[in-house]
Length: 398
Ligand code: ARG
Image 1 (spheres, rainbow, N blue to C red):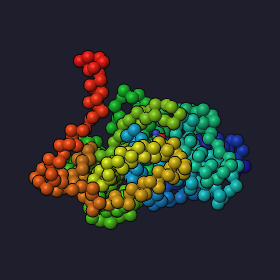
Image 2: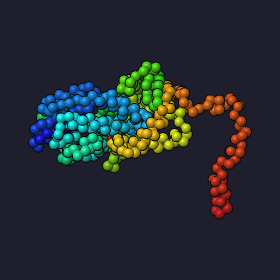
Image 3: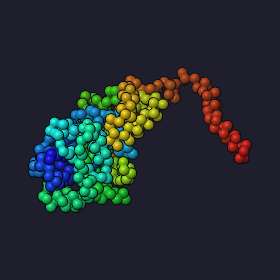
Image 4: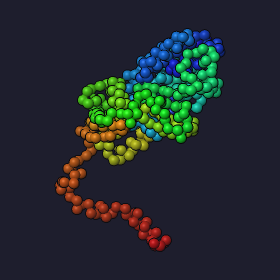
């Protein structure tokens, strides 16, 4: 029998390999999709796959991830209750790349993922696989065995599978260009403050430089294209923003998250580039979009975030929202200057040729706008509320 394991090189996916062998899968293929996780992780996956006798492929999907997944996340101001959806936006692409490898080296008796039965990723990965490979047989050994992390570690030690975790260092980490998720261990108690050791991409705000840094992001049609005047493609631009913001401690997020299955969990993230770029994009939209459009777009953004959280990249509503957003983003051009300082990012200035703003009309120092014409409009404001108050006085007294 022949299996393809969607492989990160971490604990969950590593234990899948000896387990599959025990079940009689002689031919094991592994695929790791590079969405910007650290190079050591990719090398580690390659080494472990080779130790475990698997036929390994690494797919470099960084540029596509940046342009086709992170850029929409900026345009929709990705926000699921404070989470910029960093893990969530990578799953559809990982599933798509895995499906491509399955087509190339298949057919397979099973395409295997390491998701547990408690998380969101099982939904995202399996939907993505079924979308690109209808009818594909899918296995999820950790979920099938109902294993805990400690049980996985014990099993790995028993069969001599290469892992780095011990029962004391038990963080579950997921990384890509858009962010780093940290779960498990002491974080599982929402009453415990995140220990400093969980952070790798952001310096502690208290240890950040005493001098603030300023950065200017230029947008064209909703796409960030420049940093401080330098033209960059989405991948290079996100990588640069990652370093700039991380150095100043920007991008730490600690939230209570409502998972798809209804579980409330405590989640920590480091998303320096996402926080910087979404803050800039939102500042530009606030200058450009008409009031009704802005209010409606906030609803669209929230719906998009919910679909993306559920992994439904490609749902009909997802496509409809994307069409709406494409129309809106055409005008989102201009630049935003921000200050990074000890964990915070502050908008200092914004400008756009599409600004829906008239300094002359808004200014306190301009008299061309005839203020006295407002008298009648103001008098009718709240008419129904005033009528209601009158009725209350009449029937209920003062
Ligand atoms: N809670 C986040 C999400 O569902 C992050 C999941 C991170 N996964 C992990 N293996 N640590 O999008």
